[in-house]
Image (cartoon, rainbow, N blue to C red; front, side):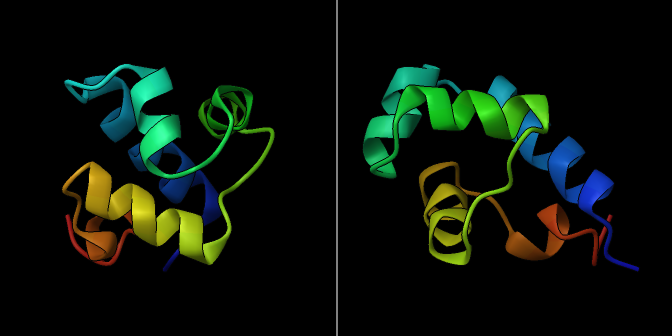
Amino acid sequence: MITIDIIRERLSEAINESDLSHRQIAEKVNIKPATLSQYLSGRAMPALDTFANLCIVLDLDPSYILGLIN
C-alpha cells in the first residue's frame, strides 16, 4: 500500500544521499531551496510534476519512491 510516510522517507533518503547539494537539486527542478527543505522535513509533499522531475534529476525509480517495489 502506498503511504505518505513511505514516500516522504524514501524521497528524503534519496535527496540526502545524492551527490548534488540541496541548492543544486532545487535549481534543477525549478523550486526554491526552502521548498526542498519542506519536503525533507515532511511539512510539504511535491506536486506530481515536481515529483517526476525529482525522480529524473536524482535518477530514481518512481515505483520505489512510491513504495510499490522494495
